[in-house]
Image: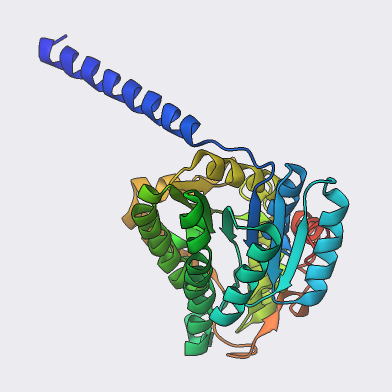
Amino acid sequence: MNKFLKIALIAGGAGIAISLAGRAILRKSRWFDWSGKNVLITGGSRGLGLCLARELVQAGANVAICARTQRDLDVAESELNALAGSNNQVLSFACDVRELDAVEAMVAEINSQLSSIDVLINNAGIIEVGPLDAMTTDDFERAMDTHCWGVLNTVRAVLPSMRKSGWGRILNVASMGGKRAVPHMLPYAASKFALVGLSTGLRTELAHENILVTTVCPGLMRTGSPRNATFKGQHRKEYAWFSIGDSLPLISMNADSAAAKILRACQHGDPEVVIAGAFNFSNRIAQLAPNWTIEFLSLMDILLPEMGGIGRDAAKGHESESKWSPSILTRLTNQAAIRNNEI
C-alpha cells in the first residue's frame, strides 16, 4: 500500500476514534436524572405529549402539561396522577401557546407552585393535510403561529428562571417534515422548517449559559393523531393515505419507544436527534441524494388526491372516515388513538 495512503487511513481512523470518544465524554458530562426536575410539556394532553408525560412522571419528575381543550387535560391529568408517586406533582393548564399573555401567566403560576421550570418541552402542534389549492393564508399563519411563534413565546417565558438557576434544557419537537417538504402538507412543512431554524439558532445562542436546546425531528409515529388532524379537498382520500402511512409497522414508530428516545436525547444534551422506524431510511436517503429525494416527492404528489371534495373547507380525521380508514390497514394507529387520548 502506498505510504501516504496508509498514513491517511491511520490519521482518518484516529480522527474518527477521537471524535467518537469526545462525543461520548461530552454527552456523559451533560447527563442528568429526571427525578425532582420540573418539566413543562406543551400539547401534553394527548398523542406524543402524553407519552412523554407518562415517561417523566414515572421517572419522578414534576410535570405540568398544557393544551387548548379542558376535557383532554382532565383525562390526561387523571391518568398521570394515577402514575405519579407520593413526591412528584402533576399540574395542568388550559393554554393556547399562540397567546403570549396566556403563556406568561401559565409560566408564572408554574413557577409559583414548583419554584421554577427546569425543562421545557415544546410539543404543541397542528397538522393540516390537502393540496396547495385547498390551503388558505390563514392555514399557513395558524401553523406558523403554533410551531414557530408559540415556541418562541414559551422559550422567552421560561428563560428568566433558567438563567437565574444557571441551568436549563429546552426540547423542541419539530419533524422530519422540517427537513424536507412532503406534498399535501405545506403549512405544516413550512412552519416546521421555521422551527428547525429557530431551535438550532437558540442552541447556538444559549449553550454558553448552560441552557441546552435539543431539536427533535421525528418521522412517522403511531400516536393516534390522524383522528384529530385537519383534512381538506378530497378529505376522505386524504385521511385514508395519511392514516394508513401512519400505521405501517416497520416505517412508523411506536410512540412510547419514540418518547423514550426523545427524552434520552434531552438528558444527553444532544443538539439534534432524528427519530424514525427501523426501516424508515428516508432521512439518510435525503442526506445522500437530496435532489433525487425531491424528484421522488414530486412524483408522489401525482399519486395523491386532486383538488375537489370539500375544497378549502376543513374536516377532522374522525369526520373523514371511509372503507379504507379505519380498516385493518390502520389498526395500529387506531389502537394508539385509544391509548393516547386521541378519541
